[in-house]
Length: 138
Length: 138
DNA sequence: TACTAAAATGCAACAATGTTACAAAAATGA
DNA sequence: TCATTTTTGTAACATTGTTGCATTTTAGTA
Ligand SMILES: [Mn+2]
Ligand SMILES: [Mn+2]
Ligand SMILES: [Zn+2]
Ligand SMILES: [Zn+2]
Image 1: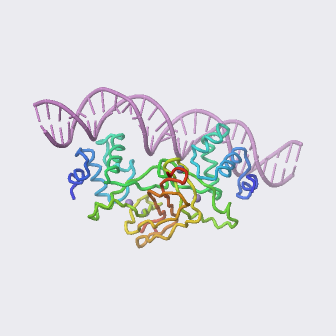
Image 2: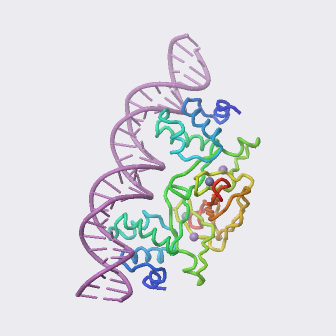
Image 3: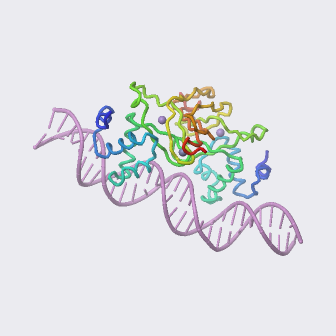
């Protein structure tokens, strides 16, 4: 689906900055940190604006946060952009290669239910695997 | 076990800073961020030194990192300080309350095996649940 | 106890990440 | 085109984390 239509579909006004950022995710296909997106879009998009673009994309269900074991957060395209249904789940595990730094969604690996102490309510869950990807393993 | 002995047992020289920091974790019983520990120990310990104390504790297996969905990392006492065996696993889930901010170890909830793409090698895994703790749920 | 080598600390300087306030500019729909 | 709302750029600031280096402290030994 084209970037323009994706924005519209998620109630996001079409701006050049948002289009650039969205194209990065569509082309790169992996989770990206703020800094990585910034490197890709260059100075065309202001640093603060980029933070706000990422925020708005997350709020509108276009991106989801990916926990990073280092500092900082990464973002990745939400499932329902690949799949058709809009069941905003994104309840899957992620893998981060500790050598090349790439982070990928393991969309077929749903996060299993984890028992919690009595009285606790779970709203969200993040599962991050660390290791070596097929490129970096030897 | 007393703080002094714990340090010795983990090959860490006994210093006043390390004792203060270790006592924080022993007393508080939950995961703490650098900033939270800093607030607890006050100016007795330099900010940079505190970073290095936490690092050294992690390297020697006294603390383990806990992924935080916000910025920054937290640390928690390693299992084998509660249990007796030294099987440095710490392969358990964590729960962070989005209201009070407390993070606790779910030591009885081991992180299940997650299938990864062919050729990937998994070395570590982090599972963080977010929600409301029994105190904050209503 | 005094000496020594290794480890830990404090401090300064810096880099990266993230937030807020506010005025200017752009997008949308009428 | 006009009016309204949203988005953007800019500056200023806060937090988090790292590195280099001189000084102090620890722990073991003579
Ligand atoms: Mn994902
Ligand atoms: Mn834990
Ligand atoms: Zn890799
Ligand atoms: Zn709570």
